[in-house]
Image (tube, rainbow, N blue to C red):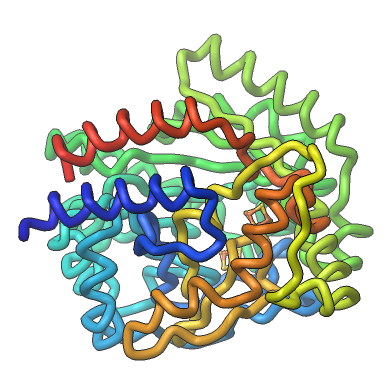
Length: 377
Ligand code: SF4
Ligand code: SF4
C-alpha cells in the first residue's frame, strides 16, 4: 500500500479515536518528535540540560540509525516528524542519513538548530535533504545579550550562518526549508525584543517566533522569570514592527510555569496516576491535548515523554518498535481521561496545547487534513 494511503488511513483512525474520546489510542501517531542526539555545544541558561529540577531527558546520547529502521511502520504513517530533541542535531554525524531515511517515507520533516555549525556543506545538505522547516533560536540581537543567555556565545558567527543558509536557498531557488527565527523572552533579553524584527529581516528570516521561556527549575524562575503581561506587551511592540517590515510574526503565549507545575503535580500526587481511577465529567468543559492525542515524543535512547513541557515525566523506553503499547501506558491514558473530563492535571491547565472539544470542529479539521494528506502525503 502506498505511504500516502497509509498516512490517510491512520489519520482517519486518529480522528476516530478523538471523536470516540478514546483514552487509549488505536491509531499510530500522526506526528513524531524524534531527538537524534542529546549532545550540545552551548550551555543556554534556560535549557533543562543545565541545572533543571527533575529533568529526566537523557544527556549525551545518540539515537542510532538502527533505531530509525525499527520505527519504519510509524514513519510510514506519520505526517509530520520533528527530527530534534534536547541537543544540537548538527553534532550528529549521521544526521542527514536519518533525515533522508525519514523523508523517504513521505513525512514533512522539521529541524531545530542553534545555528552554530551551519557551515556551507551543512547548509547545502539541509536544503538537499528535503527538510521543510528549520527553527533557529537567537534570543538576542547582539553578542552581549547572546552570550549571557546562550553561553559561551558566538552570535556574529551564527548570524553569518543563517545568512548563508538564506543565500544558498535563494541561489538554488529552493522554497524549503522555511526559516523560522525565534526569541525566547526572559529577564536578561527583554530589552532586545523590539529590535528583533529588524534583525530578522537583515538575515533573511521567513517567520519570526516570540514566546516566553518555560522555567525548568525554581532557580531559573527566580533568575530568568518575568511577568507574562510584561512579555506580552514587549511582544506586541515587536509584532507591530514586524508588520511594518512585512514579516510574518507569531507570538506563542506559553505559560512559563508549565514544567514546574508538572514537577509539583507528578511528584506529589503519584496516586492520581492510578489507571483504574475514573471520574464523571460533572458538567466540566471537555477538552483534549493535541500532543497526547496525536504526537509521541521520543528522546535519548528511545525514552518516551508526554510532551516537550513534561520532561520530568518519563513514561518508558520505546524498544523494538513497541511505541503502540507505550503510548497507551496508564500514565498517558489517565492524562487523556482527566483532560476529556474537564479536570486536567495542573501542568496542563494553562497549556496552549489544550483544545476545546467540539465534534463539529474536529470533523471540519479531519476533512481539511485528509484532503491535504491525499494531495501531498
Ligand atoms: S542549544 Fe538547545 S539543547 Fe543546546 S543548550 Fe541551548 S537550549 Fe539546550
Ligand atoms: S496539555 Fe499537558 S500533556 Fe498536553 S502538551 Fe500541555 S502540558 Fe503536555
